[in-house]
Image: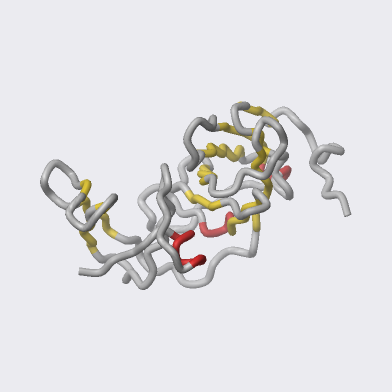
Length: 184
């Protein structure tokens, strides 16, 4: 009987129409099954799993998180304008996906240390030197293109600028290059 709205609507206090939605559901309990439907366009328009609610089970409480490892970057359009409202999906091999939403300036950030193994039972151990991060960007505006980027975890501060419509591969880059160095 509870409702969760698009994250952007919570920030602005007004409901808007989006091509894609970004919803943070808060207050869920560990190791509990939840059922949900997705509403759109009015009170009686629901998307479900062939007439049944979708279901998911939350992972267990894990206690202390590994040390902070914040990944961040920027998404821009092909003409180098900030891409507000895009969703960045982050995956590490054998890990559950994380996501972040870009702000007005196209910037996004996510604590990478919160990645869990696929069954959610533990934090995912990864080697910052050799682990490959894959990022896919989904655009919430019509007529925009998506993007993807792959890189080594050691080169994620910041992630090279993600350009919509481009697929970029930085896995072979060793160490930080000028493109990776944060400019003051």
